[in-house]
Amino acid sequence: MAHPAPTQGDVDILLRADKDGIATLTLNRPQARNALSLALMTAVIDELETIAGDASVKAVVIAGNGPAFCAGHDLKEVRANPGRAFYEKTFAQCSRMMQAVVRLPQPVIARVHGIATAAGCQLVASCDLAIAADNARFATPGVNIGLFCSTPMVALSRNIGRKQAMEMLLLGEMVPASRALEFGLINRAVPEAELDGAVMEMAGKIAAKSPLVLKIGKEAFYRQLELGLSDAYDYASRVMTENMLARDAGEGIDAFIEKRPPVWQGR
Image (tube, rainbow, N blue to C red; front, side, top):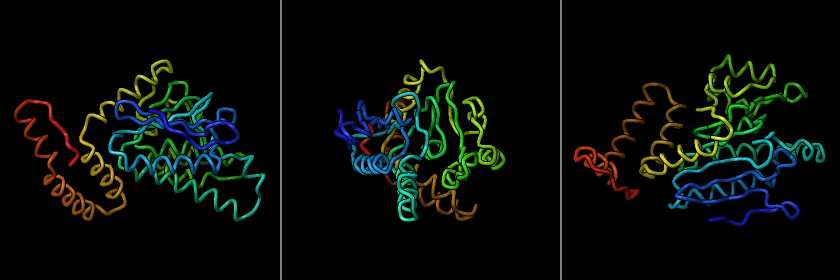
């Protein structure tokens, strides 16, 4: 099903389409390379809040319409509104959007084509998984225009090695999909003609899992990353115990022993 989206002028700036438990959110400002205006970031946050409470959605795909995935912040909008208040509002909203992706109960896959630069690269890094066309390119190029990519740095540095992150941040150069794959910024690089199929195949496999277990596991993954080793094991052990008490865990183990497909109930 499709859902109405906020508009900018007469154009829907965010599109949503649902199929087989997968919700695809498409950034729809193609002439602006899907630059993240305040309106677009707000629309993404609002839609993710809706999806978080939608039990029919098992996985989410974030895509971009037109020639690019996302070129980052809308610099024209930023320059048209000079001043601390607007800058603070813009970067705070961007931070909320990225954290909404991370905190969403459902796994999120970035479908990347064209370019993903600055906050667009940040969005890729914030998603749980990312599949890119093999001709896609990535960059945190703020250093080239006098604006270091400090907020993209947060997501980037939590996804790839320090040396690779600093290379991207200090040089501001385009990184091809093949190197992004080596860095660990994306999971796969596929021919552009195969991109949709690869994304939907991965999303479909996720959608076939227990939604309760996916929610438990995603939250635990990000929480334990911020803990020391001993605290991480203590926390993960508590999570495993609670998980074992869930109906779906018993069903999954029984189905494995009995060599039959599990029937998930999400509890």
